[in-house]
Image (cartoon, rainbow, N blue to C red; front, side, top):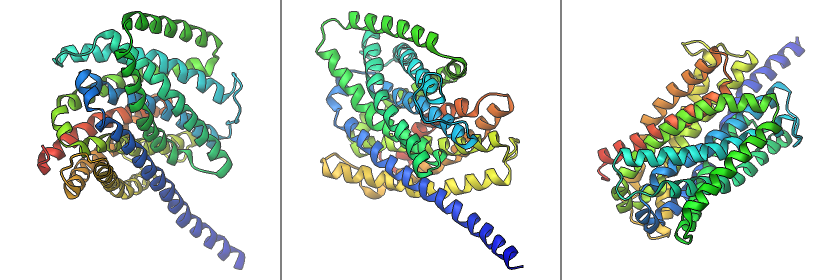
Length: 411
């Protein structure tokens, strides 16, 4: 009798503690992500001259940031699922889980950075962004900046994976927010560094041709080195990442068209990467958790969310609003410290909360149904869910942030 009581007490305690630990991991990862992304926003706010010199650069930034988060967030989610299912081995062998994922991310980074550049240049012409950069400029900035940023994000991803094995972190809770946020932090300065290279080079056209040739040869060689896992990841990832790039370019056009308003309220520009990263990270967390549950058979991928899915959605919403407020606070503090113009703390908070409510509503819908649909159609939710979620939420986040700015009276 006593043993039965102790067992029931132990199960009850586990039910209480596990959600608490999950919530703590999510909140810590999201707030740390907000701080990292806000620093990336500060780089953006202080690059006014460069943004004026190179029309179209701001439009490229959401897509470049999202590409890092999509590629490495999906990689982290795949490795997280491998940890949960017991197939993960922490080694860099070419034929291992980590090795195949590394080669796949390298191929996707190189090839899709060039695709992003071409599509970005086309969108700039289509939407009438005046005096935009040349195609060669786009290729150099997107590819070189993307490679520099990807090296840093790759290191962060591997550290998180190693930490999850060593310290029993749940990768579904920490990978998406931290990879997305550190992607924001390193991608902005990496793109600005590549943009400086354009100003200092008299042969940008030749450099762009050299980059494209290197990408094609490197992609071919890595594909030949890969095995079934790599081929599957690349084949499944490329179409969805292509669609994600289209969505992110649309988000970039929205931001580029508002560049004048953003430069007159630079604290909002500082908050922009953190706001977009938070929306995408929330969706990424939900997508990762649903993917793991679907893989393990702990939840049914049904059109009507189960109690388990609803519980995950509720817990995510509970941490969302404090994190959006943190984004506003971090942007205000950084703006004050660096003497950037600001609409004021409370207006920033109102913008973040109003935009956040709209974004979170879309987070739950997009994250659940994109992950559910991928699983039901026999596709890998880790590969399909996160890119569609984060990119869709970049567009939604940019749109809702502009709406919030108009409603609050910032613009």
